[in-house]
Length: 142
Image (cartoon, rainbow, N blue to C red):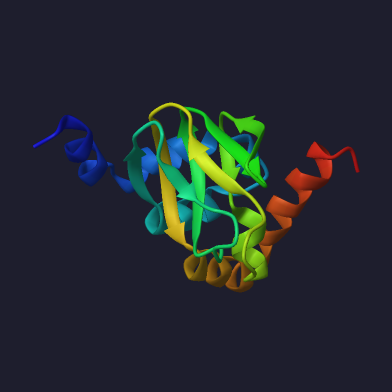
């Protein structure tokens, strides 16, 4: 069995919590919220060159990029390169097809969860929703 696949299947909840603590996107989240998310996330390693999703597809999966680089594309034009943090959040929350594609430029290590789980977490845990909104407000200078 491939070492990456073994690592993917044995990552514990505690290990995921430690990973989540280091993600700026979740810097305002409480330990309880991180534990909740850790239980929902699954770790994946995606090879370079593979698309996480393409433009026009519904936001069915939320990605949290831990390692590697993901390039966003709009209309076939290369855009921003992400190196850590959330990918596809707004498409997951809106329920609408996304307007960008996301391609792994390098091998990427991600935590992934179905958008339904993300939405359930945010609706049942208003404190988590507020923590994420606070992060975005600070990140955008509000």
